[in-house]
Amino acid sequence: MITRSEIQLVRSLADKRARTETGLFVAEGAKLIGELRASSFRIRRIYAREGVFTGPEVTTASAKEMERLSLLKTPSDSLAVVEIPHRTPDTGRLRQSLVLALDDIQNPGNLGTIIRLADWFGVGDILCSEATADCFNPKVVQATMGAILRVRVHYCDLAAWLATERAAGTPIYGTFLEGDNLYETELSPTGIILMGNEGRGVTPACAAQVTRKLFIPPYPADRHATESLNVAMATGIVCAEFRRRAGAKQ
Image 1 (cartoon, helix red, strand yellow):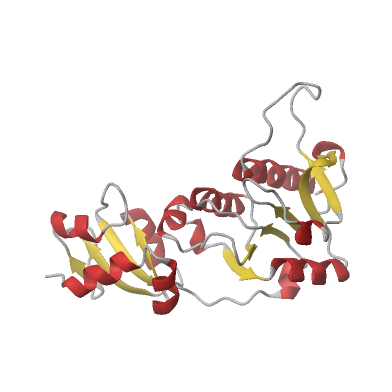
Image 2 (cartoon, helix red, strand yellow):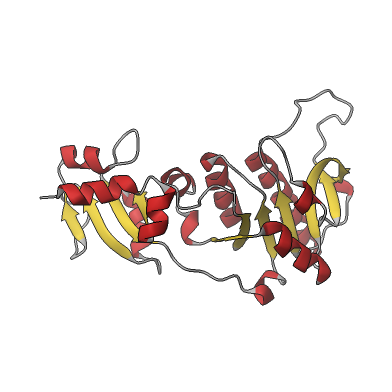
């Protein structure tokens, strides 16, 4: 029997304030929970339909109880309450890697897709401004398709961090309409790729730290195209080109 207080706790985790206060987040679906069980993440409790999971941390739930617990439009067969990991950025590792920086990305779906793209292209760390959507928002977690378990997402004063990295000589790339053609510009195998807000783009404070402005050209180049690309789509294009160049040099 699942208690009312258990249901209230799970439902409260849709809100960032509750996630911050409890240090917990929700993950749903057998595939994602299976990956969680094999990861370093600590699971507090799993609620699942009979036969889906077994173990001391599993509570069997009826279809009606899963409907009351689930934060999804269509309830899943299982739900896990998981501890939010505490991660500190490793400056030495970051400076030897390709890193994504997200400047006030607001849409949970976009953030989840970007985390998934980072995982695909071997980007292990993402640095986010404090106004960027919470990576443990249930919608973000589901959109990552498990990538949240492998990509380290950090929140910080992004403009200050970029300023420190620029002073240290780290290349900082950003996408701008007035930038240089992505496919004709020299790209380094390591550095920072800065992506801006869905509507406003990169904030002035972060833009001031960019050392190389990039532009993703339409095809053909003189064609009148849509005003801009979706930020997740643009992130995928830029990451793909960085990795293509790195592979070509090997």
